[in-house]
Amino acid sequence: MVVLDIPAAEGSAKGKALDLQQMAPIDRYDSLITGTSNYDDLKGSDVIIITAGIPRKPGMSREDLLGTNLKIMTSVAENLKRVCPDAFMINIANPLDAMVYALKKLTGGTKQKIVGMSGILDTGRFKAFVAMELGVSMKDITANVLGGHGDDMVPITRLSTVGGVPLTELIKPDRLAEIVQRTRTGGAEIVKLLGNGSAFFAPAAAAVEMAEAYLKDQKRVIPCCAWLEGEFGIKDLYFGAPCVIGAGGVERVLSFELTNDEKAMVQKSVESVRKTAAETKL
Image 1 (cartoon, helix red, strand yellow):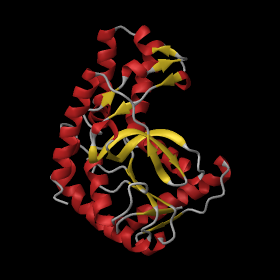
Image 2: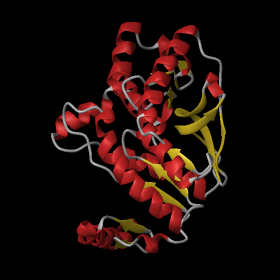
Image 3: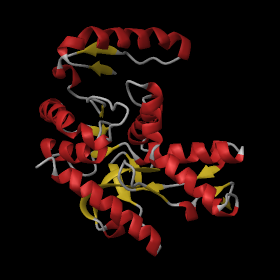
Image 4: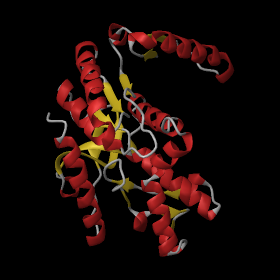
């Protein structure tokens, strides 16, 4: 594993890598972990997880980060195209949907190998809030969140279950609507609490789960930001949807019929994502 940062922060990258290496005997893993600021050290990488970019501050939307983070992504993408163009690339940088779109355009990578971490995190937040509300194990909750990684995301509540029991049978509509809204603003809630920075534990765990599904050919069904070509009636756009991730990367997108209300919410999210993607001018 290689931890990479800009030259000015190379010491931080090396220090974090060494700290993680020293955790290996305690947590019982045998990975060799190094830190660097040299992209050449990434040659031959199977998976790249991109977190580069400035974090949000209270009052900022993800879209507010576009100008600065697009410049950073441009530099990252150009280097990755040079040293590891065939790697499975998972983007976390915000605004996520626009940044993964930029990553694909700038690297020329395939839709199978360029993906965004969003749906798995958004779904995780929704599951967490449902578990907290009902006092049940998070392991028994099944859910799916579609759409862009922003305030217009679409939790599909009618297909969500708790131990096989429909969620709509367990939580009253008004309360469920509140949980949906908290999910949509879940990232902003953490930004406000931290005061200077954004979520990092859950996004990291989400990206690792995606990487593991790829490396171990698990064929996991994971909600993520994938390139759609007609699924849910959406074309030529990176958008959150359930995907099968295995050794081929994003091997397929699982589509299903939406209700009229869900279609309206998805369309609103589509418009928001298209607008931000267009602003990259790529």
